[in-house]
Image (cartoon, rainbow, N blue to C red; front, side):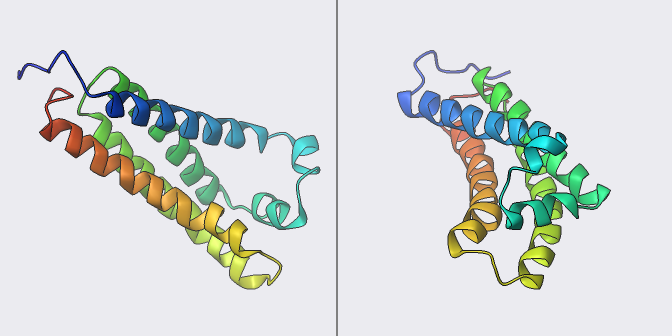
Length: 144
């Protein structure tokens, strides 16, 4: 097993903290969507996605957010297996986005910012954390 540097750059910790916040927020969002009274308070566009979401898309959403959160915890403990969890999270994101795009394309009431936040941003974040894990491994900030 390779030795991990004891002085990891502050950027590493900042990126891990941001990832923990992002994925914890996604996990809370997932849990909140199981509460019908909370869903009823959302805008019509969001309710259209949530209320019509098939079980395979719900499963993809759960895998996306919880694998990403676990991946961030593994990064926090400087483990390279975080990369595998971020790849699993990306697959869950793709599955979720298939359904989201079906709803978005069927309705014209989605704003550009809603589409960006619900479709583009999750893909960017998932890919970023995969790349960041490999970058951190190369920098010897995490162990193999």
